[in-house]
Image (cartoon, each protein chain N blue to C red):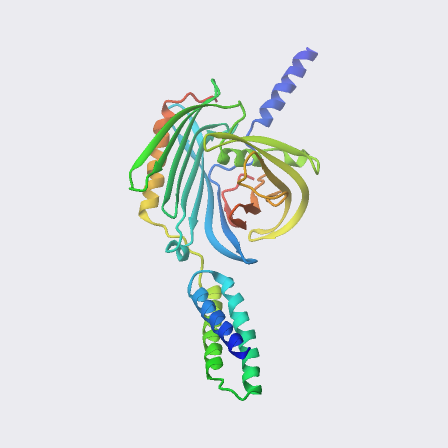
Length: 109
Length: 259
């Protein structure tokens, strides 16, 4: 049981770390919370059985890194849209083409 | 004399109804589109709606432009760069030209509608990209009803309606031309409520949108739109449920408003 809980905590912690690196925003908090809960249960189980807690401590470390990264990105990263020349040119060209198309049309006043 | 005055009154009321009272000539509305992932909203894209005047040699039209761009952080995973344009009569908002240029994660599609309101027809051009990078085109002539509009013109047309005169629970149906097919969109006024937005607390008309014969919008009363209950009737908040999930649209800024 302890091994199963520890394995699930490792998976959740790694998933949390991956999602906190990727731009998924607060969704990374779900596996982070799961990793914390499972890590705590696994830690208590290991203490009761006087087993090695080194691996569980690594899980906590990964989870804390993921949490800090996720919070940092949520607070400091702003939503920016790339203003590339290609898109500006495309919009300009589209408008020029439209004006040409509209020249031939009969428009009611 | 009496009938003349009556006729004049009728004509003036028609004229007033066909006037653009809500949309500014240099209006810019910026929104944030968020997608619901496991109950948590993730900001995905910026949606911009702009208006500007366009002059041809013999007339002036209103250029309605809608843009959807994914935030830079998403561009490496799934880049969206969509451009929707409609060129409409500056007073009646009657559309004359519609252009849709969508680029979504490598998928490209271009649509153009040239309206002919005298014959109630639309000259349609569809351009798509093949897997090998080459393009193919399809030209069609479509028969439309007299009040059919594209999606952008419909959105601005809704803003120009006298919603304040409508009663709670009343609905209106609009015909929209999308992908060379006509669809009916029904708008129901659900309530009038005050909501907090990024441009302040606004009293709004809460509208439910449903689409007949199309599965683009899912659910019953799951697609909602909040328009400010003032003369500008700007969309400040929207909730949508589409086949791939659900999300919302929140206003970030509004400039160049008419009223």
